[in-house]
Image 1 (cartoon, one colour):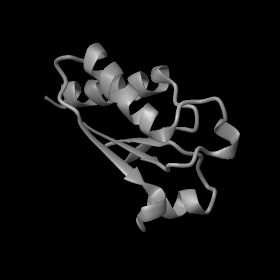
Image 2 (cartoon, one colour):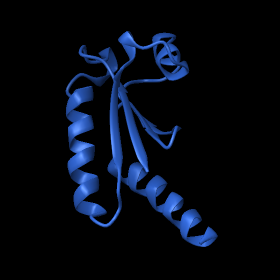
Image 3 (tube, one colour):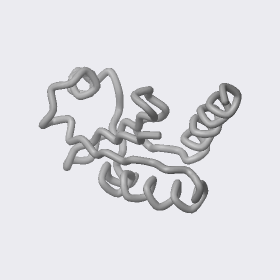
Image 4 (tube, helix red, strand yellow):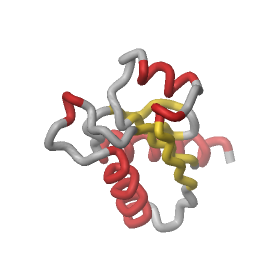
Length: 101
């Protein structure tokens, strides 16, 4: 599973007091490693201000709040990221993978 976090050096105006994008990225790496030690994750951090892909453009157009978290290319949370949403998306994905096997 691939976790992608889009963020920026400057914190979003509505996220004052929340962890920064890079702090969220590091926090997710640690939290997911503890919760799912048997699961292999790849992590990617993208500074959306330096990127031109569709998610970066959507962030620039204020369609999403950042940090924006994706699981295998699908948005699972934005802004002040909540672990329960991330866990639910991972467990749903694991369930669908296990169901196929």
